[in-house]
Image (cartoon, rainbow, N blue to C red; front, side):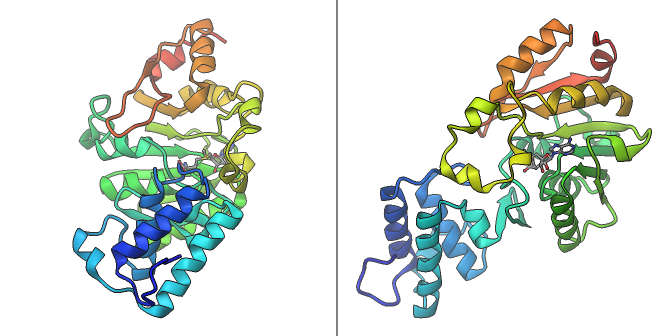
Length: 301
Ligand SMILES: C[S@@+](CC[C@H](N)C(=O)[O-])C[C@H]1O[C@@H](n2cnc3c(N)ncnc32)[C@H](O)[C@@H]1O
């Protein structure tokens, strides 16, 4: 991808050329990065075995001829196949953590990561709670982030996809969180008996059928089970909301991402007299609501 004739270019020159090539190819960015530049930095970081938020000084390093070949190959495949970069590299970052990823789980990007970093403030007193559940854990990213950030928490995580469960378990072990995070194969709460949690967080599938057809090609490489959720995007969200009350402590909260299904869910909540709060994010993201256990208990059937 390097357009310079130098076989061993500076990092910053390779990043510039790769970003330009990806921009010109009209790729979609939104699977863990927001721009071609960010993706080019990520590829270099992957090649140099460092985190993508490397310092400016790294830009002055030279890339070996061998490595240039490998990096160029990744960019060429990104352009040719439109796969999200995370799948090509086999890794994705959420906050400070690196996860193994594959096409059986969505690429981590949920705004719930910001809430976890803040200890779910001001809604939860993080030091006073113990048990967190992550519904639809995918590669295990939110569960691991919560456990790593708040070592006093005990985290359970469920997913209905056996392949996602295997991947999540691998990430838990790689991050040495086996004591703190338990992964279960489960359709929503089915494998959890009567367990109750202080916080249930969920990023379930919520893309309405019509929207699925219009998504950029990159989304077609992600598992449909992680995205598609029926005509209005609420096929998984509604049973999740209806069942959550049986798995929350009396002062517990459900925090759930519904993305573009926000208007449909808002209408459903009003019809069912469910009091919810839509949360705001400093670093971008929307369509995340919070419901208290008492509100969920009072919801009309
Ligand atoms: C949007 S992805 C979220 C993955 C991960 N939590 C994240 O934020 O990157 C939704 C996940 O929910 C899982 N899922 C779909 N239906 C489910 C169900 N009924 N019970 C449990 N998990 C489900 C999918 O397999 C997928 O991994």
